[in-house]
Length: 438
Image: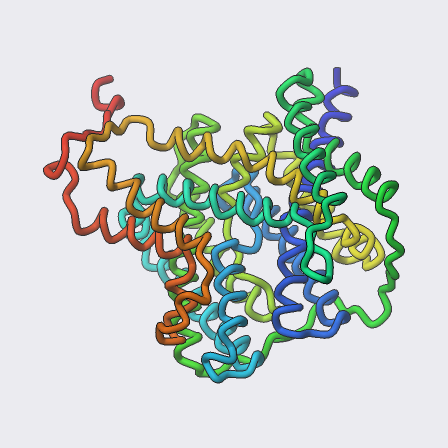
């Protein structure tokens, strides 16, 4: 029995390794390309991301919120930074100037987060990010991640045409992983993500052999302010700072979803320590050109998909990620993981997040009036996600990255609606407080 548990822990740890790696590898690469950095600099940022992410996961699992929730680059901030890069010419700023403003905004946001913990204002943050706002947040996150992974499965050729061979392979792999989860026994279902990652990687290498030069020469572990030194570009600082504050909702959404999944109560100290670590990570991320860190609410989908809730594999997986970052050849080898494979498997893993978001609405009833609590922010947010941003070029360049970000706009609309409207008197919905009847 002990031997069986040992093997189960080993495979679960490797599965966490691939999940964490697949979630972060594309972020520094895309940021590096957006800032027109040389390959060596991008490789350095990737190494930094691996080391910092692994350490962040371990610390959060041990002394932060203490749940097996991945801590990594925020999807909200990732999209915001890419949008700022695309707006560089419209803003009349160079890429290093934008990178420096982003670094300043992240440092300020990290300091503010630490001050919120120091002055015990976390309860205020939880009050602002109400359960309904967090439910809308999870639903918008599900759509945003689905769009990202779905688009990643559509392999485009250099001439702009669709490479249907690789695209069909991606969709076929997604179907296989889903069938393993649905039809497989418990062991196969629990490790369907790992099977899909490794099996898909091998199949891709056999079907689409591509020789990629792998070298670790000249790749440092860390580089200070690779995107640009901190500056006082107030417009960039303001937008980055706002995005970072919205990113705080990641912690609330993740911990609340985890507490329901694990059926445990969360203490105030868990929130405080988690926010404290997030604030520290924000400052560290700005130093090394990384995207702002936050707990991944999408980890809930991974946990529900694998049904492995033990914290040990998660901590071991974080340690393995650090080792990969420290040893360049390992990181460079895993960096050859085809995006078509990673996106296909993650699409299946994150499909569980839709169930999590829908469950968060349990206890609410809606009528023809109160349904707007969900419909307005979600439908507007999803619509903005799918609209071509070039349609909004008539807007001032300073607010363009904000208005065209469907996730942030949907979240802000929900926040304003929940703050300004007393839904208890607007409609007939009532939160079912079962705890008060016990």
